[in-house]
Image 1: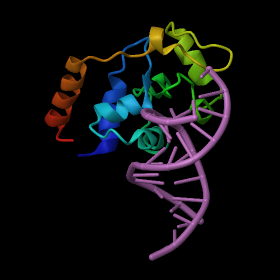
Image 2 (image 1 turned 30 degrees about the vertical axis):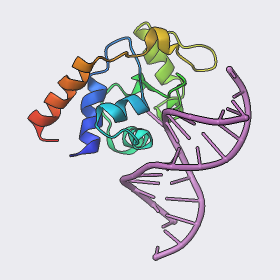
Image 3 (image 1 turned 90 degrees about the horizontal axis):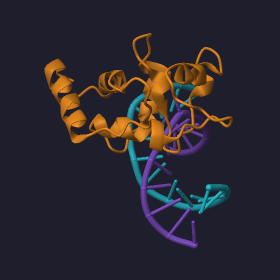
Image 4 (image 1 turned 90 degrees about the vertical axis):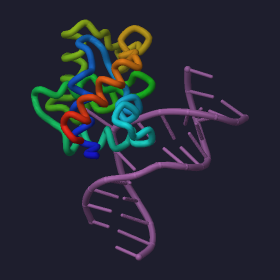
Length: 118
DNA sequence: TAGGTGACGCGGT
DNA sequence: CACCGCGCCACCT
């Protein structure tokens, strides 16, 4: 299985106006302990205009990857643009804007993985 | 080969 | 809440 390709698929499935955590993405990729690798993937491997990396935050709702975007404020701007409120310290309220994915979401991901052989 | 690093996270205090 | 320790693991030096 190609972890990085899975990260790409999962990121593309984060709903508009919602955010997902690194650990959550790792879990959906079938690798529970790879939260750090999700961060690595987004920073060095997975990139492109069709991949909403700005919707990924850490378990506390903090925009921990903000500095890695083209401009330091870009992640915050992109989120606010789709209705996600970011406070002055760079945090989003996961209760309101977290992607509370269902078992169906997880099974759909697996369907994509199997279809694409990754 | 050994050791350091990091867009991380959980459990304990 | 905050802070801390520890586990985690692919990638560099």
